[in-house]
Image (cartoon, rainbow, N blue to C red; front, side, top):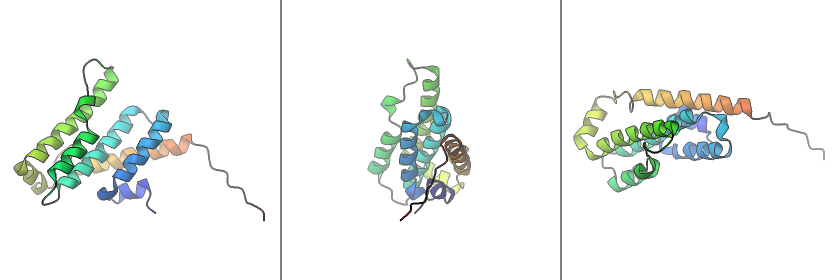
Length: 157
């Protein structure tokens, strides 16, 4: 059985949707464990890596990538006007990723340049994976600090 930590440490991008779902559930139950900005950075990075992995296939399914792009970064929900300053900042951050990923999706030459330059991109390159791993470490450490230690009692027969 793989853990969220091992999936991300091993960069098993094909299985990143599992940690994404688990982190979402944990955050929905206990949103105060981790600051919203750190949580958004973490899940945005995971979503971007999932989409980049789908686009790295020689003949990827545009409909599938587009569906995931809209699921992960729904443009209609990423408003920057008429919302709080924090929400505007968070939505701007996600919109930035949406735009970069959309450009890659729609531009075969852009993808080729991206892949051939060894992903030397500050936001979508190797630094993204390092950032995801660092953010996950912060998240897990915080969860471990905040949750009570489990008590295991021996059951007598």
